[in-house]
Image 1 (cartoon, rainbow, N blue to C red):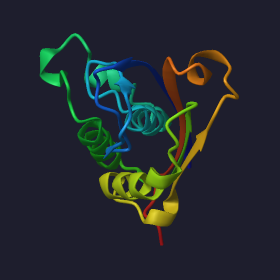
Image 2: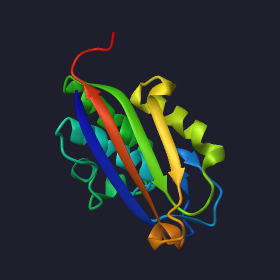
Image 3: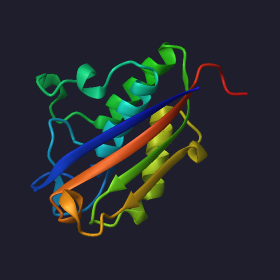
Image 4: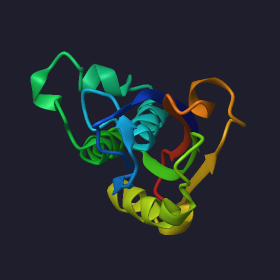
Length: 160
């Protein structure tokens, strides 16, 4: 078994679409980034790649490459998962914590989990996504940013 950790953060700005775990969320701001800036997909990509010691998301899809401008980060996550399988690993489970003050994510969590499970080819009960506030402290608390932390467990043998 191998464990990987991922982290991502983006500034929240007006005029950007807000997408988390592949779910569009109505809000007056969205994360600023070269791609769609989906912090769940980015943190998870880094977690699975890191567990297999295969580098990180930025190394595969650099923000200096125009082909990744406004890319769907869930597609990038799916490509990372394919690389993991090609390297001889299975993703056993993933866990994500999103940190932001608002909007409330509770109504969207189940759909996010389903999207991630689909992209990673995992059963729904092997995907956990939680939302936390930072009690109005720091960039996630004052509404100027969003962050996500992710862990992934890989197995080197097929599940039984």
